[in-house]
Image (cartoon, rainbow over all chains, first blue to last red; front, side):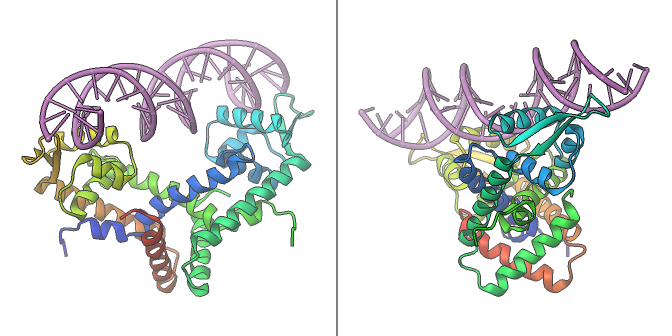
Length: 148
Length: 148
DNA sequence: TATTGTTATACTCTATAACTATA
DNA sequence: TATAGTTATAGAGTATAACAATA
């Protein structure tokens, strides 16, 4: 069974298709949210803020798997858009606590709209069973392999 | 139905999970093939060469969706590894025709091994039915949305 | 002294533009 | 003049390192 494998075997793998289709998906999502003045990472930050209680920027960086300095830049830009507010934590004045504004929630909602639109576009030639199975399997993998 | 959507709705989408899991998959694949002296794009080039008849570098660039100058760099590195050969086309001496060597085929095979290993790792907590459905759906999407 | 946020710098990846050889 | 390949340059994105304020 140590057969020599070629392009066909590589292309058939889940990892290969996840990686390449993931890049396509990310590009299309980026194109959609660009109209909102956002990059995908901004949407990620908005989602992280909407998910749980207010946290420090350091904590956000860990959740998102990015450098703290990047959180600073993303938050700066979101603040400029009026999407987030920075409030110094009165208990530990080193901490900047980020929170979503109404505008931030509206932007996040429009990101979700864009993602749902793209889902329909991407899965147009899957039948309902296939689509549900894909959605379910990806949600399972997400829960297992993504930070949350 | 113009309900305000939040992080939960965004995270549940296929596009979101494809994008984020795709990045995870790509990172893991990159880590594996690094031991072979390769980056994912090198594997992509090897696979493209294995897929069809010999073509020019320009044609390769179109197939891979990258700039021609990147194909030059990738091919340089693969040639250094003894994985590809460059032969001037005798009919049009501007063209460099790339072809896989035995070493190149061996490297590609090891890339496929790595991808199959990662598949098992990634889908460890899916049952056989879920796994097959995921694999099938991704292959369908790949045929529809990736160049080939 | 350690930690949070910030700023400054550097690195990786890849595209665009300029150049060479051939057509 | 146009095209294949190559080389040089530039930009986007993000990390690492240095710094300031607070603990």
